[in-house]
Length: 143
Image 1 (cartoon, helix red, strand yellow):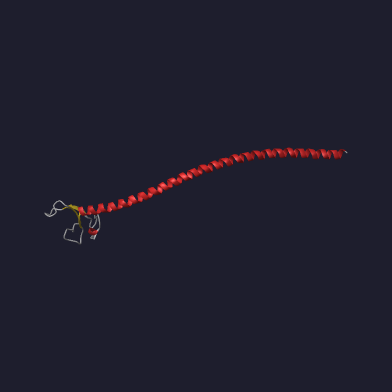
Image 2: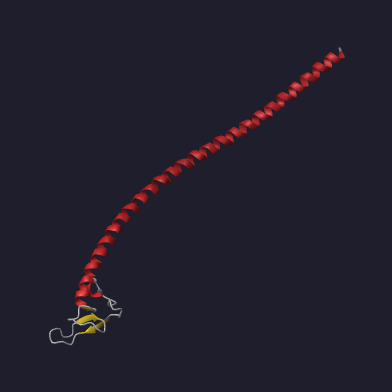
């Protein structure tokens, strides 16, 4: 039965939508309650529930939900702090890697320059060998 559920009821088990009404009885004048069209304080088969009791239940349930949210928020905050710390570590590692890469780039440029110099030196040596071979051939041919 819907009136046994916690908090503000919306429907009766008979399917009728609950309404908030005001008591006009001598024992509970002006007291708000929820009821379907068939519900009253004596009929336990239809919706009847005092609004102040519903309000207390809603507040109690909200307190539990707020406590859960506060715990979840605290856990999330700790996780966020851990992520921020890890991001700082990764940032430092990235800077270190960038410095190493920059050093490698400089070294590669130096090696490329040395390779170019070696190529030029080899061309010079090749030309000298060709000249020597030509001279030897000319000497042998002329003699």
